[in-house]
Length: 468
Ligand code: DON
Image (cartoon, rainbow, N blue to C red; front, top):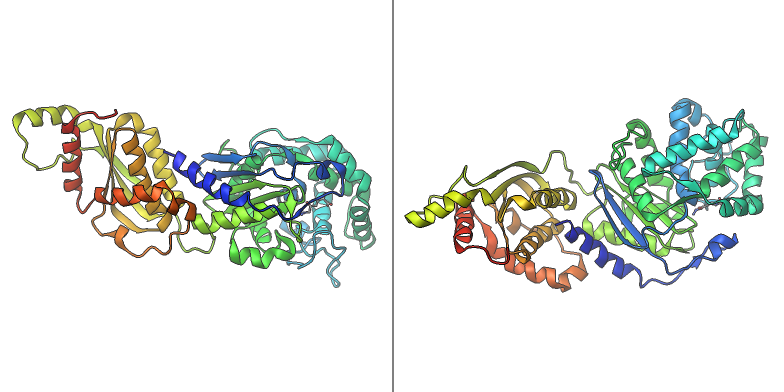
């Protein structure tokens, strides 16, 4: 069942790989030598399911996507007051490596530009044991990703060898009295953190951990406190995409962070995390295909954080088989005997709340895990208030997928939620593809009452196995 989600991602990815403008970062040889055509996309849901496309398992260095993680660690270790005394939360509207600080307070404007990131690094340094300080940072990143991460030594050495501008920023901070540790220690930790090796899948899991308020949905581990995640996401929203931040928030509407390796991490709070990797960069230093992919995901899957919907309650309210709710359709003795033996093969799922991409994904997961238990599934929308365009497509796609395996998917829609205006269907590729034909044919499987759907399911049982 989740392969429908996979298909959406595959389709979206196909539309992103056409873009071949932009330049690969080449300030160090390791970044300049990468294959510019790589493209990896991963989506991690807040309940732990994971979908990947293309080069989602290819390693690259995390670069500036490290900045929100070190900021989270600094806040956890030092507390808000100590961090805020040295580091602001205002968008700078400047390039990432601008040598700038607030003229009055001398604090860097925010932790997403290099000056602020170096201050955050200085706050997690252990001056008595620098190796232990970095080990703690790496543990924190690994807990976010749900696996042990390592440093790319060659990239670290190159960052260190070519990092004159970052050193200049660090010594400026030292001269302004912002650093409490040796400037070389602070900038060295920053070079190391930028050189941690990750994949697009890691970025998606890190993002999903932020989306879940600091709890890694893959490992169940509490990585970061929710009030810290809230601060980190706030700063990512206003500063994460540098001088492109305003356009990003309007068009994509997801707190995000990019890195010069071509990484983009984006978070839909409470719902999901996205990781993209593609090395060509635009004039702001953001991955061209990464930005395109996030734009498509946001518009096609309805992910803008200011879309006013939410999944407050579990979407599947209850589930049972139709022995509890047999139809009142008169049956002769032979048919009644068959149905008595087989009514347990029809399951009803009572759904509730708004139907969105996220809530439908959890329904599909549930059907998938129950798949051995039914020959026909009835989704009862009796308590569903709204269904957006994408969730309707998924509902009808579910019908087509069940049909392909010789089973039946029925929908009960007493309040005609599916007939109400749902806005434009934006997933062009799907519109033109087979799924839309399936949507049309599946409309005939929507019933106004549960008893009519149960009766149809009983007819299906009586017709006997098809491809089953
Ligand atoms: O500070 C630097 O030069 C790099 N190692 C990391 C910067 C980065 O990823 C900027 N983001 N787009």
